[in-house]
Image 1 (cartoon, helix red, strand yellow):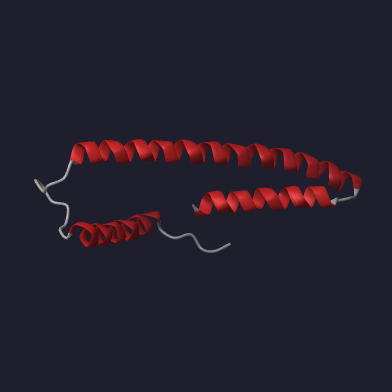
Image 2 (tube, rainbow, N blue to C red; image 1 turned 90 degrees about the vertical axis):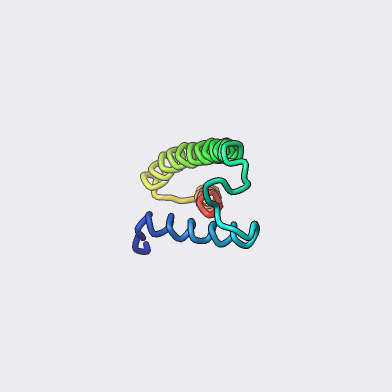
Amino acid sequence: MSEARDAWEGVLEDMRARRELGLARYGVPLTPFCKTRSLADLREELLDGLAYLQKLKEELTWVSKSLDVLLARLADEVSAGRVNAELVSTLHSISERSRAAIAE
């Protein structure tokens, strides 16, 4: 597993990138009294953020429940001294979906 990076560094990198995108798109930085719909824009962004949060919550809940089922099945397989292709396929599927959810 790779070394964890400082979460704040990631946030700062993202903020710098967003600032550059805003400058490229609008030609000016976001400043007090610039011509934006700040309150409406913020409300819309927060609503979008809540939708993304709900999506991630549902995905992570699915992953958690799936891993619980898989772990129970794996324990049974280990006890019986066998591992079958379906179990490996299930593990692979969960792994792919987890990575896809994290990568988005």
